[in-house]
Amino acid sequence: LLSILNEGLGLFRRLADRENALRVADEASMLLKAMPEGASKAVILTNLATTLSAFEKPEQSIKYYSLAEDIYKNSAQKISFEFAALLNNKSSALSSLKRYDEAENCLEDAIEILKAVKERDCEIALSLLGIAHIKFEKGSSDKEIEPLLDLAWEYINSQGQKRDSNYAFIISKCAPSYRFFSRDLEADALEEVAKEIYGGVK
Image 1: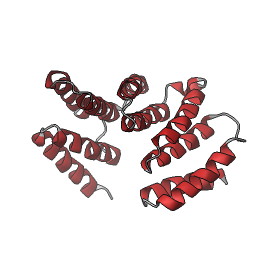
Image 2: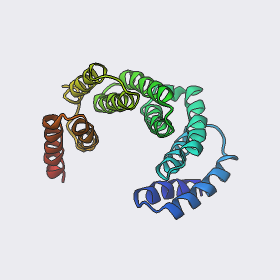
Image 3: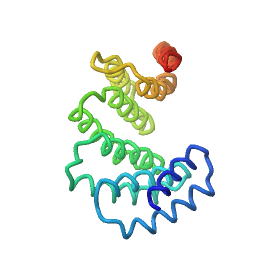
Image 4: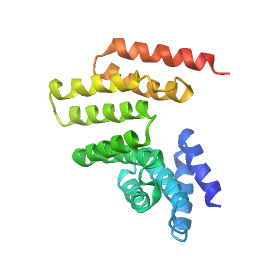
């Protein structure tokens, strides 16, 4: 049943169906209390938290992100893409609550994990852009923000990064950040590359 509810969380989030998403979230949260600690529980907790955050319940979401985080920290998956993804998502929830220092720490930790995991340069870029947005919200100067944009660009164009559909998806998420910071040339290039890759996917 939890597996089905987990799929429902993602589905209703993508459909922007608030009523059903929150209904499924309530059911999942009750069942999770009896589920043994482990990687599967951490995945569902993260999905639950992300759904709550998507429907403007960041404080509730952070509780579940933290529970999942504890599981990862005490398991063999403390260096994993899944844990890094959790930290990225938790950062967004913290930012919405203006807890910027905590949000930035989450992204910095995610970057270190992604470096250890390897072959996730594009995701590192996305985390760096997240830090750039946080610094902007904190009122940081361009001198602090611009180097982050430059470093993210280096990771996006890393030779070790596969140019596949996942790459296209990630750079399509990076493009709006470059446009936000008036780096239209980079934004245009990312959108064009993503379009080319998607166009070639069979």
